[in-house]
Image 1 (cartoon, one colour):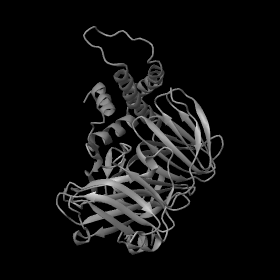
Image 2 (tube, rainbow, N blue to C red):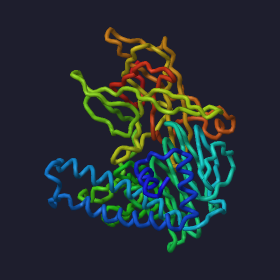
Image 3 (cartoon, one colour):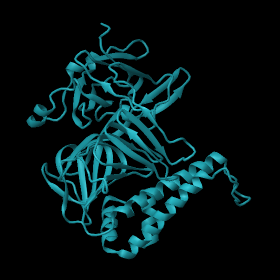
Image 4 (tube, one colour):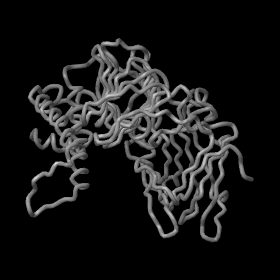
Length: 436
């Protein structure tokens, strides 16, 4: 594969895992390719400027007249791709064979790319040199620790490149992470880069989620400097605050106070369009909105084939501002839902502990005979948090994370296991008392 095609497929995100590993190896060994990537990284900065100047008329061939909004979206999409390449070039500056991170714990499918190879069987306690870590699956997690005790937790479908050569350097290409960062040298803070932003951390507790065109930061303790890559503007985000850094530099970059913790909250799909990063397919109908289950990777078998479930998720970490939902001993999860084929359902709670790090995944199975559909097929389902048990069957994990009570709910997922029953959700609610 020639270099131009290689870079193009990297931009498009169409490389296979094996080809992506080969790109990593070549970037380490080929100085010319690294220089080529650096050139493209510089274009990313220029592209950010171009995305900001869309009000300036741009000559185009007479045969093609895209709308202003279409040109805007195209520039932002291209800028996002180039920002990812810039982040890749930023990491590949030399050999890094010294162990950097240790896998403290994991659930679901976790893979590590290093030295041109993908490793899919990573043991708890295994140390990893600089490379790329990927978690696969809606409920997948990985807890990682640097040598100084700094903790990083990945959740959901996430991809993180990492290195440490006198300074911690992370690139979160997609997904979400939470971190408890030990004090870092002021001259060498930990840097976390995404396609749209860079966070500078000297010691704090925070959560960060990235999408193709923006990055959402929530700071629980300390202070994080957040820079928007589109124009280089930066702000300090203090504790109990959040900020959104977008590729669209016409949006104001500022921080907002994180809302107070909530024990009750609801989302009505009938009247409100959900964030597109939530699991499911939102459909607008004549009688209101609906969220229909979409397929996702639940886990991998030992022979590396995948197990697919069909689900709908609510991810509070993807809201702006992000909400802090707390599970209590009185909490009840409620759904209004229907299925074409009545079938057992699984509800999962994905949690962080109050300090912001991983708090465990918990599940409850609702048997088909518990569902009582009305004449139109709709069911009102109530599940007390006390029914949820640790999803991980390992005894030590169950002892470490015995209950969701007192934890922050970062995501709630309902699925029909491996059967596509056309699960449809009209409303979600978390409240503290049962109506029965």
